[in-house]
Length: 239
Image 1 (tube, rainbow, N blue to C red):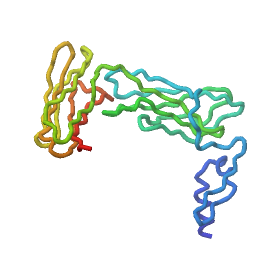
Image 2: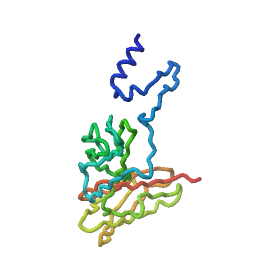
Image 3: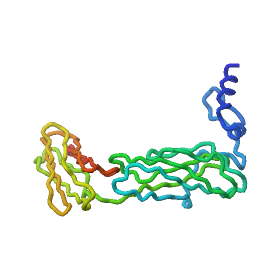
Image 4: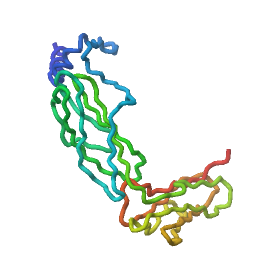
Protein backbone atom coordinates (compact mmCIF):
# COMPACT_ATOMS: atom_id res chain seq x y z
CA UNK A 1 0.00 0.00 0.00
CA UNK A 2 2.83 2.42 0.77
CA UNK A 3 4.44 1.86 -2.66
CA UNK A 4 1.09 2.37 -4.42
CA UNK A 5 0.51 5.59 -2.46
CA UNK A 6 3.95 6.97 -3.42
CA UNK A 7 3.40 6.18 -7.11
CA UNK A 8 -0.04 7.79 -7.02
CA UNK A 9 1.32 10.92 -5.29
CA UNK A 10 4.16 11.37 -7.76
CA UNK A 11 2.01 10.71 -10.80
CA UNK A 12 -0.39 13.49 -9.86
CA UNK A 13 2.47 15.96 -10.39
CA UNK A 14 2.97 14.93 -14.03
CA UNK A 15 1.02 16.28 -17.01
CA UNK A 16 -1.78 13.82 -17.78
CA UNK A 17 -0.49 13.17 -21.30
CA UNK A 18 2.85 12.08 -19.88
CA UNK A 19 1.27 9.84 -17.22
CA UNK A 20 -0.77 8.06 -19.88
CA UNK A 21 2.43 7.02 -21.66
CA UNK A 22 3.87 5.08 -18.71
CA UNK A 23 2.64 1.53 -19.17
CA UNK A 24 4.50 -0.33 -16.46
CA UNK A 25 6.62 0.36 -13.38
CA UNK A 26 10.15 -0.84 -12.80
CA UNK A 27 10.58 -3.75 -10.39
CA UNK A 28 12.36 -3.00 -7.14
CA UNK A 29 15.51 -4.65 -8.48
CA UNK A 30 16.59 -1.39 -10.20
CA UNK A 31 15.59 -2.36 -13.73
CA UNK A 32 14.74 0.43 -16.20
CA UNK A 33 11.00 1.29 -16.37
CA UNK A 34 9.14 0.21 -19.49
CA UNK A 35 7.65 3.19 -21.35
CA UNK A 36 5.41 2.95 -24.38
CA UNK A 37 6.16 5.18 -27.37
CA UNK A 38 2.99 6.04 -29.29
CA UNK A 39 3.24 8.23 -32.35
CA UNK A 40 2.68 11.42 -30.35
CA UNK A 41 4.88 10.46 -27.37
CA UNK A 42 7.10 13.10 -25.81
CA UNK A 43 10.69 12.52 -26.86
CA UNK A 44 13.01 13.17 -23.92
CA UNK A 45 16.27 13.10 -25.89
CA UNK A 46 16.25 15.01 -29.15
CA UNK A 47 19.39 15.59 -31.18
CA UNK A 48 19.94 19.06 -32.59
CA UNK A 49 19.16 18.86 -36.27
CA UNK A 50 20.72 21.00 -39.01
CA UNK A 51 17.38 22.79 -39.42
CA UNK A 52 17.27 23.80 -35.72
CA UNK A 53 16.01 27.42 -35.55
CA UNK A 54 18.57 29.95 -34.36
CA UNK A 55 18.69 33.51 -33.08
CA UNK A 56 21.66 35.89 -32.80
CA UNK A 57 21.57 38.54 -30.07
CA UNK A 58 24.29 40.81 -31.50
CA UNK A 59 25.30 42.23 -28.11
CA UNK A 60 27.15 45.49 -27.65
CA UNK A 61 30.62 45.24 -26.11
CA UNK A 62 29.47 46.60 -22.73
CA UNK A 63 26.00 44.99 -22.69
CA UNK A 64 25.74 42.83 -19.57
CA UNK A 65 22.00 42.11 -19.42
CA UNK A 66 19.12 41.88 -21.89
CA UNK A 67 15.52 40.71 -21.79
CA UNK A 68 14.36 39.48 -25.19
CA UNK A 69 11.74 37.38 -26.91
CA UNK A 70 12.22 34.22 -28.97
CA UNK A 71 9.57 33.39 -31.56
CA UNK A 72 8.60 29.71 -31.52
CA UNK A 73 6.78 28.43 -34.60
CA UNK A 74 4.44 25.46 -34.45
CA UNK A 75 4.08 23.48 -37.68
CA UNK A 76 1.56 21.10 -36.11
CA UNK A 77 -2.06 20.68 -37.21
CA UNK A 78 -3.28 20.50 -33.61
CA UNK A 79 -2.60 22.72 -30.58
CA UNK A 80 0.86 22.31 -29.08
CA UNK A 81 0.83 22.11 -25.28
CA UNK A 82 4.02 23.33 -23.62
CA UNK A 83 4.69 21.32 -20.45
CA UNK A 84 7.86 23.17 -19.50
CA UNK A 85 10.81 25.21 -20.73
CA UNK A 86 14.51 25.06 -19.89
CA UNK A 87 17.69 26.77 -21.07
CA UNK A 88 21.40 26.25 -20.72
CA UNK A 89 23.46 28.22 -18.22
CA UNK A 90 23.57 31.67 -19.81
CA UNK A 91 19.80 32.24 -20.02
CA UNK A 92 16.84 32.46 -17.65
CA UNK A 93 13.16 31.88 -18.48
CA UNK A 94 10.93 34.89 -17.77
CA UNK A 95 7.69 33.75 -19.43
CA UNK A 96 6.46 31.18 -21.94
CA UNK A 97 3.16 30.21 -23.61
CA UNK A 98 1.30 27.22 -22.19
CA UNK A 99 -0.32 26.44 -25.56
CA UNK A 100 0.66 27.33 -29.14
CA UNK A 101 -2.12 27.12 -31.72
CA UNK A 102 -1.95 25.03 -34.91
CA UNK A 103 0.47 26.56 -37.45
CA UNK A 104 0.81 29.52 -35.07
CA UNK A 105 3.69 31.39 -33.49
CA UNK A 106 4.24 32.36 -29.85
CA UNK A 107 6.96 34.11 -27.88
CA UNK A 108 9.18 32.83 -25.08
CA UNK A 109 10.67 35.66 -23.02
CA UNK A 110 14.22 35.12 -21.78
CA UNK A 111 16.78 37.00 -19.69
CA UNK A 112 20.47 37.01 -20.66
CA UNK A 113 23.10 37.89 -18.04
CA UNK A 114 26.76 38.01 -19.07
CA UNK A 115 29.27 35.97 -17.08
CA UNK A 116 32.84 37.08 -16.48
CA UNK A 117 35.51 35.07 -18.30
CA UNK A 118 32.88 32.97 -20.05
CA UNK A 119 33.98 31.51 -23.37
CA UNK A 120 30.57 30.07 -24.23
CA UNK A 121 28.80 31.87 -27.06
CA UNK A 122 25.84 29.56 -27.68
CA UNK A 123 22.88 28.63 -25.47
CA UNK A 124 19.88 26.40 -26.13
CA UNK A 125 16.19 26.98 -25.48
CA UNK A 126 14.22 23.73 -25.06
CA UNK A 127 10.46 23.39 -24.94
CA UNK A 128 8.93 20.07 -23.87
CA UNK A 129 5.61 19.69 -25.69
CA UNK A 130 3.01 17.07 -26.54
CA UNK A 131 4.56 17.05 -30.04
CA UNK A 132 8.08 16.37 -28.80
CA UNK A 133 10.97 18.57 -27.75
CA UNK A 134 11.41 21.83 -29.64
CA UNK A 135 14.87 23.44 -29.64
CA UNK A 136 16.06 26.94 -30.53
CA UNK A 137 19.77 27.79 -30.67
CA UNK A 138 20.66 31.24 -29.33
CA UNK A 139 24.02 32.85 -30.09
CA UNK A 140 25.07 35.67 -27.79
CA UNK A 141 27.76 37.07 -30.04
CA UNK A 142 29.02 40.57 -29.27
CA UNK A 143 31.31 43.30 -30.53
CA UNK A 144 34.95 42.32 -30.06
CA UNK A 145 36.88 45.22 -28.54
CA UNK A 146 39.77 43.36 -26.85
CA UNK A 147 42.18 40.99 -28.55
CA UNK A 148 44.83 38.95 -26.65
CA UNK A 149 47.53 37.19 -28.64
CA UNK A 150 47.31 34.41 -26.02
CA UNK A 151 45.73 33.89 -22.62
CA UNK A 152 48.23 31.40 -21.22
CA UNK A 153 51.94 31.35 -20.47
CA UNK A 154 54.13 28.36 -19.65
CA UNK A 155 57.61 27.69 -18.30
CA UNK A 156 59.46 24.39 -18.08
CA UNK A 157 60.61 23.24 -14.67
CA UNK A 158 64.24 24.23 -14.16
CA UNK A 159 64.44 26.84 -16.93
CA UNK A 160 65.42 30.40 -16.09
CA UNK A 161 62.45 32.30 -14.59
CA UNK A 162 62.58 34.92 -17.32
CA UNK A 163 59.76 37.28 -18.26
CA UNK A 164 57.21 36.19 -20.83
CA UNK A 165 54.78 38.60 -22.41
CA UNK A 166 51.21 38.82 -23.67
CA UNK A 167 50.17 41.50 -26.13
CA UNK A 168 46.68 42.90 -26.33
CA UNK A 169 44.88 45.43 -28.48
CA UNK A 170 41.89 47.43 -27.24
CA UNK A 171 39.51 49.27 -29.56
CA UNK A 172 39.53 53.06 -28.99
CA UNK A 173 36.98 54.69 -26.66
CA UNK A 174 35.72 51.37 -25.36
CA UNK A 175 37.69 50.36 -22.27
CA UNK A 176 41.17 50.68 -20.80
CA UNK A 177 43.24 48.03 -18.98
CA UNK A 178 44.11 49.76 -15.71
CA UNK A 179 46.19 47.15 -13.96
CA UNK A 180 47.14 43.54 -13.40
CA UNK A 181 47.12 41.41 -10.27
CA UNK A 182 49.10 38.18 -9.91
CA UNK A 183 48.56 35.38 -7.42
CA UNK A 184 51.32 33.39 -5.72
CA UNK A 185 54.16 34.58 -3.48
CA UNK A 186 56.96 36.21 -5.40
CA UNK A 187 55.34 36.03 -8.85
CA UNK A 188 55.19 39.38 -10.64
CA UNK A 189 53.19 40.92 -13.48
CA UNK A 190 53.40 44.38 -15.02
CA UNK A 191 51.25 46.24 -17.54
CA UNK A 192 52.76 48.59 -20.11
CA UNK A 193 50.88 51.00 -22.38
CA UNK A 194 52.52 50.93 -25.82
CA UNK A 195 50.18 53.56 -27.28
CA UNK A 196 47.50 53.42 -29.98
CA UNK A 197 45.42 50.93 -27.99
CA UNK A 198 48.27 48.44 -27.67
CA UNK A 199 49.33 47.01 -24.32
CA UNK A 200 51.84 44.46 -23.09
CA UNK A 201 51.69 42.32 -19.95
CA UNK A 202 54.96 40.91 -18.64
CA UNK A 203 54.89 37.97 -16.22
CA UNK A 204 57.77 36.50 -14.20
CA UNK A 205 57.42 33.47 -11.91
CA UNK A 206 59.20 33.61 -8.56
CA UNK A 207 60.79 30.24 -9.28
CA UNK A 208 60.67 27.37 -11.74
CA UNK A 209 62.21 24.88 -9.34
CA UNK A 210 58.92 22.99 -9.01
CA UNK A 211 55.62 22.88 -10.90
CA UNK A 212 53.04 25.52 -10.07
CA UNK A 213 49.97 27.17 -11.53
CA UNK A 214 49.06 30.80 -10.91
CA UNK A 215 46.63 33.27 -12.53
CA UNK A 216 47.10 36.87 -13.58
CA UNK A 217 43.98 39.07 -13.55
CA UNK A 218 43.58 42.02 -15.91
CA UNK A 219 41.37 44.91 -14.76
CA UNK A 220 39.43 46.80 -17.43
CA UNK A 221 37.68 50.14 -16.82
CA UNK A 222 34.85 50.13 -17.54
CA UNK A 223 34.43 46.39 -17.12
CA UNK A 224 33.70 44.38 -20.27
CA UNK A 225 31.14 41.56 -19.95
CA UNK A 226 32.19 38.11 -21.14
CA UNK A 227 35.73 39.24 -21.92
CA UNK A 228 38.44 36.89 -20.69
CA UNK A 229 40.33 38.79 -17.99
CA UNK A 230 42.37 35.91 -16.57
CA UNK A 231 45.76 34.76 -17.86
CA UNK A 232 46.68 31.21 -16.91
CA UNK A 233 50.36 30.79 -16.02
CA UNK A 234 52.07 27.51 -15.21
CA UNK A 235 55.43 25.91 -14.55
CA UNK A 236 55.22 22.37 -15.90
CA UNK A 237 57.26 19.35 -14.89
CA UNK A 238 59.89 17.95 -17.20
CA UNK A 239 58.76 14.84 -19.03
